[in-house]
Length: 263
Image 1 (tube, rainbow, N blue to C red):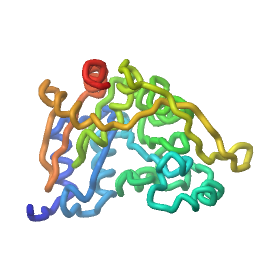
Image 2: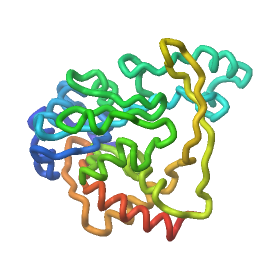
Image 3: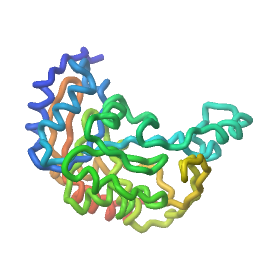
Image 4: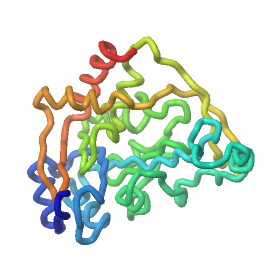
């Protein structure tokens, strides 16, 4: 087992420069803090390094999904007895972008959603948070049914020709690949109904909406193939690796890959 390494704020900024992060960029960031070793300052140091590196002229966006705010019948409460599901469904708190916590998004995303100046989208299960110049544009009007499509934060970032930065995580966490899910054509493509607790006129209601069924099982394979194109920059950081790429190049590649390989 590899010895855990010490990571300083200076190390983080150096790695960001090496991987290609620059002032003014718009970047979707996915992070696993624990994969890096011991980070002095923890999540705060990661966020400060990111925001300082792109400056207020740039934008940082992260997933802040609260996917537990779905009907238990969808399988998101697999750890709880099925006879509890009606009670859970009744008492799931309505989504509140100010206080609803993230689910398994990691310590950095959980801190980032509360970061001064950060805005969060209104989707009750698949929100993102963003900071910087394009934050409002990326997070506003996140349609219930267009979770990852052209009008979603992911789709809007594509229009801005932004970047994806993976910090200590693999392509299974690369949310931008879901935009390729939406755009690609493949035999198994289909829609599903989902439901979430939301606030409407100050009242909690249970809202159902139709959306594309996605799972991401082949995302690691897509990432492995994309890496072979030479369009990904890498830099070491502690026990982990940073990977940075053009989101547009990734999505365009993935659309073709899915069309050729997914059943």
